[in-house]
Image (tube, helix red, strand yellow):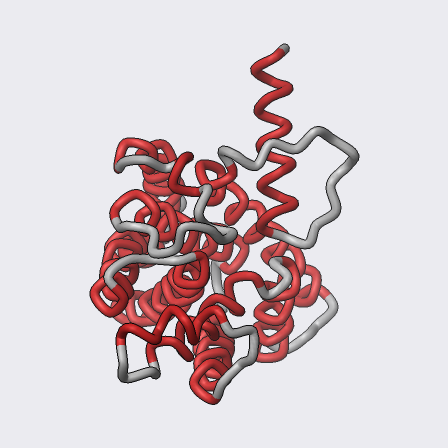
Length: 253
């Protein structure tokens, strides 16, 4: 019973930390939420898939559906990851590497942050609109791979600030071994689409693993490590690139 209670305390904390979904009154334990973030991604994707299916049933066109789903994607997370992507873009726009973290801490959104947000929302909406089939299946996996990329960033690269919302994640994800359970889960779910006779989707989703390795590495190269903001940027850009990748695989199969 203690194991179940501890697990519920962690999963409720993860929902509270990474989403705006209300959780019942519970003793929340935030120490291990980073281990559960891909699972939270799958849950977010399932909600988005349900929303998309409902809109399809009532006859909403695919482009409009895609826009609504992307807006809901941001709303469910409270803009947590998108805000990180915007702050990261503002920081990377600074030519002096020593000032980048200082700019990222500033709560004011600059021009580059606004452009990054527009680019992400546009890329996700258009790419999703090009994927008319299997949306209920790919949305959870895209959100899951995006958050596994966050685990990679936590495990592989140094954290650049002594404090902050992302600092305690390093105590939960200490090495590559801590990312393996989520990786296996995502690989198995991605391969399931092959069994469902959607080979292009399976291959495309498996590319999420490669994208989830490259995106954190790129930000590390630019900054010399990661912060809570770059964790959010990693999630957003991995999701966007994976959706784009899926459109390419769909057109070649």
